[in-house]
Length: 130
Image (tube, rainbow, N blue to C red; front, side, top):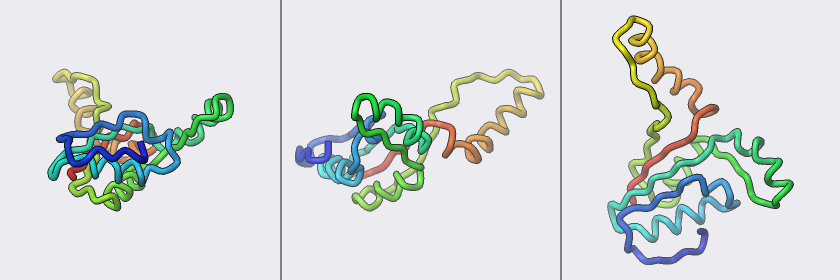
């Protein structure tokens, strides 16, 4: 992933649960930026920073690289690679709500809960523009 040089030939790039297997995320983002046409979009999904610790067993047993990133670190790396309009979005809300008072409360409180606990607890989804 780090050394791909495909020219500016793609409209979009998807990095899904892959970045935490490389020690050089900066080079992966630079290669993705080089491969995207101007205005092209990158979508990234990664485990959160806890994966660095939760992946130790696999790392020891299979010799794989298992890292974890905070949303802030990923955003910084994307901007350093030349991406702009880097934003986090959540794809973790998979419920429908009814009209009861409890459902209304959950619907209103959930974004606050994700904002407070999301960096530690949910998968990270980012999108960025080349």
